[in-house]
Structures are given as C-alpha cells and as structure tokens.
Image (cartoon, rainbow, N blue to C red; front, top):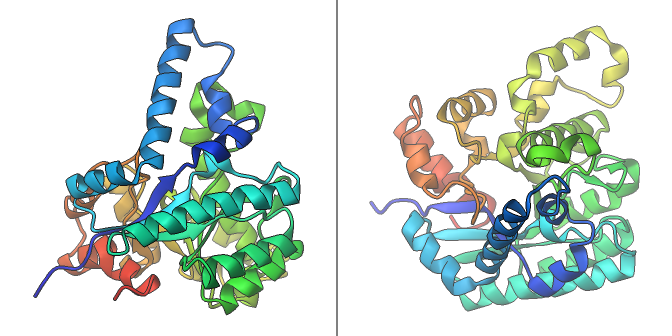
Length: 331
C-alpha cells in the first residue's frame, strides 16, 4: 500500500508588492528596524528578511524545497506578520488581499498536484470579508482563508465577526488562525513578539472562540490554529478550574473547556518533541496536522514527527498527512 501524502498546512507566501504597502505596520518589518540594533546587526536582519521574502514569493524554489523536505503538498497562506491588511482602510485592504489571493490561486493552478491555497481577508470589515471569502471559495478555487488572532483591538470571537464565521461554516472553508504579531511594546525587544507573543496570541484566540460562544454557534467550523495552539493546550488545568468555580466564565459555554479544545485542529510547528507529545495527549492525534512554517521553520517536518517518541505508526500517519487529506478533501 502506498504511503499517505505528506501535507504541510503551515507554509507562507509573501507578495512583494503587497508587502511594500503593509510594511509600515508589519511587526516583522518593525523588528528588523529595532532602534537598539548595531549597523551590522541591522544589515544582517535586512539580508535575512530579503531572503525570506524571496523564498516565500518564488514558486519554483518552493517546490524544490518541498522535495528536499519530503513534503508532497503545501497549503499556502499569506504571511500575516508581513502583509496583514487589518490596519488599512477596508477598501484598500480588500484590494491588497485580492492581489495576494490572486497570486496564491495562480501558484496553485500552476502546481495543482503540489499546492493548495488559503486566502486572506479585510476582517476589519465583516461585510467585505464575507464578500472576499465567497470569492476565494467559488471563483479562485481556494480551500479557505487565514486570519489573525485579533482584528485591531477586536477579539475574533466578537459578535461583530459572526457573519464571517457563519459564512465560513456554510462554505465548509478551512480557517487557519495565525497571529500577525502582537504590537505591544513589551514584545518589541529581542523578537519576543515571535518567541512568546505568538503563543500568547493563539491562546487568546482559542479563549475568545470558547468564551464568546463561536464554537457553540458554529460547531461545524474547520479551524486550525498555528504553532500547536500556542500556550492554550498545555495549561488547561487552571482554565478548567475557573470553568467549574466561576460561573461568569461560562455564560456562553455549554461544555467544559477541554471539549472545545478538541473541536479545533493544530499544527506540529512546536520545535520540541516533548511538546508535540503533550499536544497529542491533550487533543488526540486526529486533531494534529503537519506544519513546517515554511520557509523559516522546521526544515525536516516529517522526520520531526517520525522521531517523536510515543507516537504510534497510526498516529504518525494521521499527523503527516491523513488528517489534512480529509480536512482539505485530498483523501
């Protein structure tokens, strides 16, 4: 019997002409220009940034990298730390997202056996976001969309965004949640927005979906959270305790927090086998998908899963490609 496809659900794209417009508020771009950097460090940061952007924009280089990584299919999504459009005026954001989505769709069309795609949206305008979601799913042939963990100062479970969630469930769209980066000054130094802030943002996103009743209202949603769900799957004890002891925490919840956790999917981009084992123990192997964070993350994502102790052969098969094949209709 032939092996399952290895499907990488966390693989980024940058459209340089879009990034030119979004760099002014991009957390990534701001980090590269941090005031405390020496001229040499600033030059090194810029060279690395330029290299990363080039790799995310080049489809042929991507396919060669996939072959080297042992990845059969990548699911492409815009790199929101570079080109999230939420700070732009809605119509400007829509035009930028449409340009990015068109580029991703073209890459998928050029390599249909190797690539699938997710669009991006001007979520600060729920009406325009729904409009672009429909276009992504019906006109562009994409599999869903990627969104950040919050929209300006609005959490993603806010009632104003329910039209988006309702349409995503209706269209059977995969929603990949990946932070655009926390702009708080506390996270500016030392790339803390990346090492700590991203995990914090993912935990907050999951909390918002639970506490604001999104997962109850739209139980058929297909949501995958990047970086293994951030801190949330690994610290559920205190959350479960609050659920039991503090009635105000569960006014919009009909089930325990652990049950909501298992309604979501998570990628394997955690860089540590012990953490991956804990994630699988918390949510089940059927809820975990291979994710590399291409081109800046895990360059041997299949080996990472294969070498993680305690995962059975069946678990490995699910995580490497079986779960994603079902989620994205590739089974």
